Length: 147
Image (cartoon, rainbow, N blue to C red):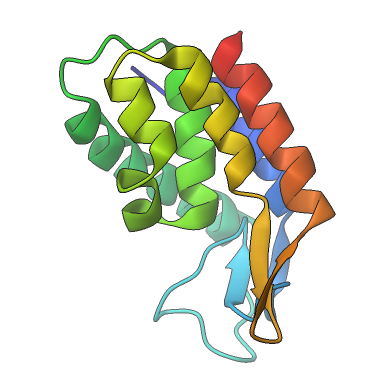
């Protein structure tokens, strides 16, 4: 199981690269290709090479976590890449406790694919709302998962 180029392209398409720290649509301080964490502070500026290197580090570390949770579950590179894109966006714990992963591990690939679409909401001003960008992303992740 590995992150394929189509998976990297999908993540980058929806994250886009911003070299100055900014607040995303749901209020999280973000930089580069959707990188978040304690190292991201207001006013932080990165070079393109820092953003690219951090993207590789972030996807590599998440790949290792996802591979552990998939263990011996039959998983194509497309399925792995789609789940990794979801994980990159919603966070490790959310994916690890998701219907997507639970159904995938049970061998219900159609159900797992459909469950991607459940993750199209974000909390904005204290309310869960459907975000068009997330809806589009989930449809592409579902398509990659099923390819």
